[in-house]
Length: 486
Image (cartoon, rainbow, N blue to C red; front, side):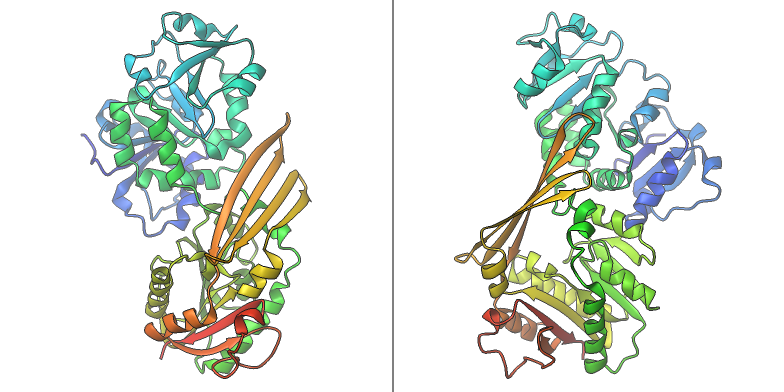
């Protein structure tokens, strides 16, 4: 029976693969269940259930050809290797700068390999060179070091050396799309990472939007352009930095923040506090402290890497993968938080209005929404043409920040050199924030279904709203807005 075109069939025959996938996808509780099927040894799951997947025993796996209209995903390169009748299928590994084709057996590259302008290249002593003698425009490198120094992004390194591929891919396992062109199947590549959770989460997110990409790949199955566009569409802030975030923010007194938040709640709401939601929770340093105080805490973040770090903490809250403008899971929260100038990441008035509407829907009557902003003073004095370098346990982190006053735009670029077995790998991410005037936010709040009760700074116990707004943007580094659902 041929499956629905909207289905995603994940093949996970090896021990532990299905368990890891199910665990990683707990952050996607609202994913339509009938979109995903996972084929695995059910006896290994010991009764484990999933809100995301239909679980099927591996023996019920249809022939690969009968799955052709669904998106086929192998859990790992190892799981692909043990599948039957797949002994001669090529595998294409693609990241921003590299493309590697691992050829299998005596399979020949089709003419469609050239659609999109790919150029084949090979190492001088690689046995795969015998399969390429008739190919046009072939480039031959004397060794892998020469290839890495001189390669061009449009080149595809054709090789039969699995060890070479593994050495190249494991340097940055999260930055690759793995594609089997002959059978139109993707691969999560779990066996190329020692911590595959965020890799799985990124992969699953990508496959949810893959039908258009897959259709293009059916026309040009070796297209680097299509695969790289799919990769760029999923990029977000706080990827590699998530693993270093707590170390970089170790100077922050989170208990001090929590104390102020609870004090303001008691000051402005008469509701008994029991249920809290934190938006843009990062690694859940605030949320986990609230859990420790006995509250029921739910939290969300768009960065899957941040969520992975948060999930490993003692007293971790219930976590969701959501953006600031997504509907908030659940309702009847007495308190919703958005801390550490996350609101500044919303770059338009309409996005802030949408977030306020979502918060209103999720709050109970009399509940509070507390968020903070980084002010103009903070950008001008602390984040204008500033560069910091930090040593970490396994590399070097550089943080460069600059402020564009004409656009009220705050930008931070993070560059990380991570020590590998041989040399260093390079990672970069860039964060953009908008610096809002207090008057702009007050106008947006007045148009929202929430009412503004107070504006605070940790520098003074006084409520700054509405009588102390003069020059407030250049008087305090950080401001806290307290809104209520009436």
